[in-house]
Length: 251
Image (cartoon, rainbow, N blue to C red; front, side, top):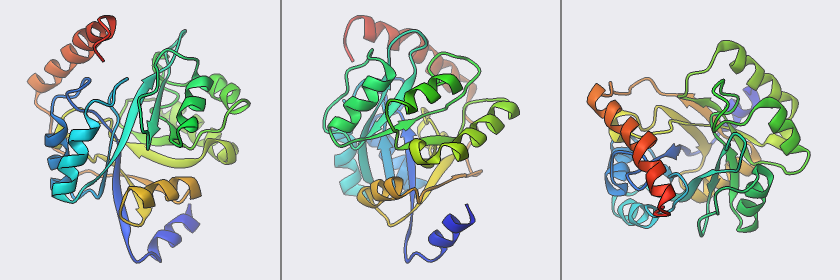
């Protein structure tokens, strides 16, 4: 980690990225354009759009990014198959990845189109949506991944955090770069809470940094309190409207 800090310290330009953010095309509360504006306001250089099982907001976000000077990376948070429906983030995608496949097949599908496979909020004690230690060990025997969120905003126990860091440093060659993400659903209220520093300033540089494992996730404390009504609204969207859209195949 000291070597990585030294690398970043010697760079002519250090970029700042949000690698995990949602729009109202899945269960976020704000439009792609509004999310890009929030990224600009928070001083980000790169914004990864990672809506659940859809890339419907990526084009609009890219257009807004071109106007505002934010490099937008097209991505998707993909729901894998049973039993616990692990989430996997695909970045630098040209088309959506089909949800509902086994985890290793989903990683394979991301790599087939030249994308990067990132594991979000790992080792959560909730089981659903989060890769578990034994499951990750099995995955790495079949497929490599390109990065894992060592820092995120989902509540976890200190034991789980310690377990994650121990696993990461024991399997760094297969588990890829240390990254992080805010899992933003509330625009300027929560975007950029967990940022990734990397050598460079745009999406191409971010991709190379992930491949080179020269990314550094950091917690940014200057975030705003999310109003209770907004939290309740988002939970309705996430727990009721999003599953309904999935059942009607409108994602």
